[in-house]
Length: 269
Length: 312
Image 1: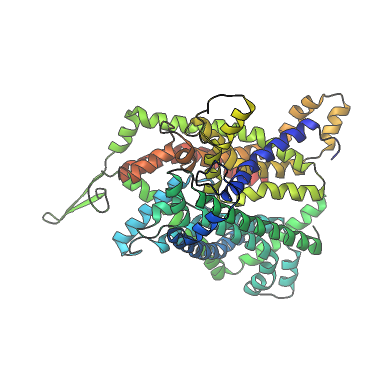
Image 2: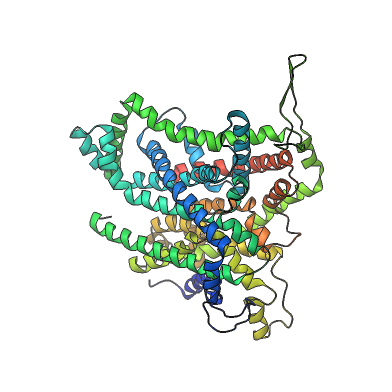
């Protein structure tokens, strides 16, 4: 740590302050008694009570959790396959194209992804009659597609950094590819898949733009409800909701880091 | 160092070679993700392109069909119009929206780099325990809801929000400033929400950097600032490029930030596309807007792919 000048520490400290000040302000104001969000009226948990009594928010939260769970699971399966194919299958026709299709969704502006998927669903419905209308299914397909890319990248980088002597040894001992994958490779990349799943879950839970394009009437997800409320101004219930979500994510991230550190200690670098 | 890399490369090849020997199973495994991505990532763009050549109609779906079938003559006509594109190029409004999106994204990317670099550098130079904690502090906001983090700024920047109250309490201003619903708030929002995307790739390259090179430069008499410009910056270039692209490309099409923090005059193309689609229900025009945005962004996206290949 010596040699880090005070200027560096000061500017980094400013950066961290910038990252955390809004979040801390949000949490503090969620306990504010006053209806006027910016006037301090003493500590209170009344907005949390109101939040849980708000049926619209609770329904939307349930819809979002369901969609996030299914999308993250599908994305974990497909993304693991994609990552595995890209790093362990050698060269094949179309590999460059597939690599492009895996990375591009990471940066593609959401409005483009959302619009293009909606138009696809409309075209598919008029051609094949499926998906009939838009709702949970179409949101799940859309979320799976962009989450898949994140899982593939995480799995691919884990496979690339991983020594394959264990896979080599299993093959020398006569493991067939399928059992090689399920008995050797899969357990080794399980932490990467798990973090990919968690990332997908939070990304799906958070997505406003793509879901707005591909959802149908009566299928509002949580971000869609939040957006419609927040557009009109700051509301104390949303502060409470945000605090709960931040708390849940913080616990998950800290737990993940602790688990990863423990595993690294066992497996070596 | 060289020999270990070489040997692990050769063993990797042999696992790959052996996996290549199974033909049918191999293609099944390749085709599952490939077909999914083709169906739900690639083909949609073709559909968008097709609809951008149609005309808006009051119908379900609200655009004219590409091929019109005349049953009386058993005769099909291809109906293609470039009217949407012509309209985009002729109208000052859309051109301005594209240019202002590019400008807002570029300026925000620059400031993200400016704030992100010292953080990444500090983390890369910290001890192991401190490094884990600092990294966790960067990753945590990245995992929390994007929408809610943008929302957090609304409360801070309001007329009677914390920022204005603080500035007035210090006595810097007498009247609350209009910060929310300005371009400044949009810049702030983008820098804030995309900061982790800049820090993480920067950290990855800076971590690999050999610190003795800087010491060498300083031993040879370079001032710290000069050593930074001549040694650190060139070595960090891959991380800088990756971070900038990860921020710039999605920022160009950003919708949530200008919608919540920007004013009615904050022109960004993502918002224009949203309004064309949801308010005007002009699907063909929205498609044309998307196609032009894709053409603008395809260069940076390809560039990012190539950069990735080098990094791996």
